[in-house]
Image (cartoon, rainbow, N blue to C red; front, side, top):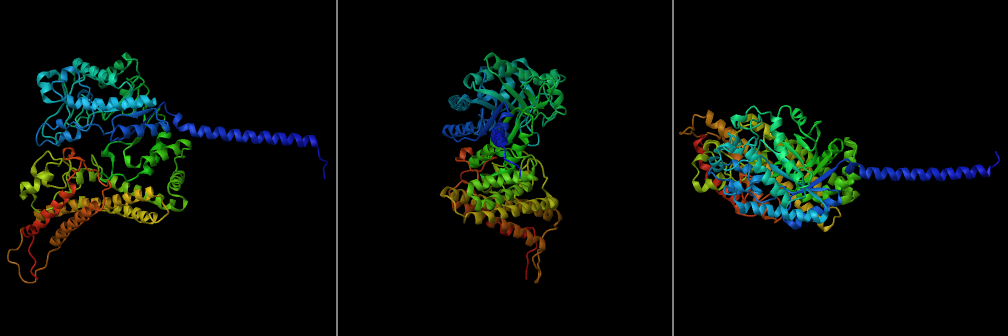
Length: 638
C-alpha cells in the first residue's frame, strides 16, 4: 500500500474540477452552436403562408419571427383574383393567370391605367401596404413573388404595336393568342420602372423579388422555353438572352438603389439550356434558375410551397406532410445558399411545421434515414405522448407512401388537380353519350372544365390539358395500380388513426384527429373517383371502337357480356362513391375539401360552394341514363 500524498490529492482534485468545468463549458458551447448553426447559415430567412385576413397574417408573422424569420413572403396565392382577365368567352387559359401577381396590373403605371381595372389594383396594393405595416411593427422585411413579363390586354398592343413581345399562351390550351410586353423595348422597361417604384413606395419593406416566367401567361422574348416556341419582336431576335435578363433585372435594382434600399431578384422558369452561362453575366443578388451571379452558386433553398398546384392531394386539404418538410430542411442544411424560404402550403398544420422547424434548427438531423425517423418519432411523442407516438408516427409514414404513389401521376399537375377538379370528374355525370346531354345537365360542369379544344375533347374524360397520357387500357392499368397503392397506404394511416383516437388526448387533439379522419376518407373517395373516370373512358372508347352494335333480336338465354357487366359496374361504383362523398360532407361542417366561399370565386381550379348540390345532380343524371347502355350492348335475356 502506497502512502497518501495530500498535495498530490489536492492537485488531482483541482484538476478534476477544472476538467469538469471545461466539459460543461464545451457542452454548453456545442449546445449553443447547434442551436444557432442552422439559422446562422442564412443571411435571409423568409417564411410564407396563406392568410385569410390581416389578423391571420399578423399572427403568422409573430410566430415566424419567434422561429427566426427575417422576411415574410407577401404573396401566397391569398390576394384578390384578377377575374377580369377572363376576357374571351370559352377561353379557359386565364385560369392559370388570374391568381398570380403581376407588377403592371397591381402597381399600374400611368400609361396602362386606361387598360387595366384600377379598383382591382388598389385593392391588392392596399392589402400589401397593410401587410407591410405589420412587418414594420415586428421589425421584419418582405419578399414578393410575381409572374413576369405577364400578358396584357390586346387593346394595349393595338395602341402601342411595338410593345408587343412574345406569345405567352399555350396553343393547345387556349382559344386566344396572348402576348406579354417586350422587355427589349426601352418604353416597356420604363413601364416596369414606374410600376416597381410605385410598389416600393407603398411597400418599402420588399427586399427580395422572385419572378416566374415562360408559364401561366408570362414569357421572355425569343426564349426557347415559351410554349408557342421562340417569339418576340423580330428586331431584337438576336439579342443575347443574358443581356436581355440583365437589363430587365437592372430596372428593379436601379429603382431600389435610388430609394436607398437593397434588392435581390431571381428568375425561375426560363428553361434555358445553359443557365449557368447566363448567371456568369449577372451580378451578386441576381439569379436565374437558382444560380446567382457571377459564380452560379445556389441563390436560395426552398422548404415547402404556397400554391395549391403543388398539393398532391388537392382538393382534399389539411393532410400533414412532416416527412417531406423535414427532408427539405435537410436539403437546405446541406446547401450553400444564403437565403432560406420556408413556405407553409398546408396552412392547417402550421403548428406542426413550426415545431419541426424549431426542433431542427436546435439540432439538425444528419440527413440519414435513421436520424430522420428518430427526429419524427420525437416530434410525435411531444405532440401526443410516448404511448401514442408510434401511431402518429406511422400515420405520417403511411401518408408519405401515399404521396409517393400519387406524385407519379404528375403531368403538368397531379391527377386529382387536373382531373377531379379541372375536368370536374367529381361532379360531371359518367354517361355513354355525353354529347347528348341537355344544356341544363351539362352547363353546370362544362363551364368549369379546362378545355380549349373541341366539344369532343371536352367529352373525353381522359383528355387532361390536351394530353391523353392516361388514356386507353394501358392508361387505365397505370392509374389503377397507382391509386390502389395510394389507397393501401391511406388505409394503413386510417387504421393507425383509429387506434390513436382511442388514446388519452386533449379536446383539441380529439377534434384535430376527427377532422383528419374525414379528410382521409375523402382522399380514399378521390382515388376511387380517378380510377372510375379513367376506367369508364377506356371502356367507352374500346366499346365504341370495336362494337358492331347490339343484337336487336336477343335470344332466350343471352347473358350480359363481360364488357357490359364491367361498364355498368363502373358506373354504379361511381354512383355509390359519389353518394358516399355526399354523406361524408353532410356529416360535418369541417373543412375537408377546398371549396370556394362564393359562387363568384368558383373556378376551373376550384370547386364551388354548391358542390354537394352538384354531386346530387350528377347522381340524378346518371340514374336517368341507364337505358342508354342498351345502344352499346346486347340486352341480356335470360
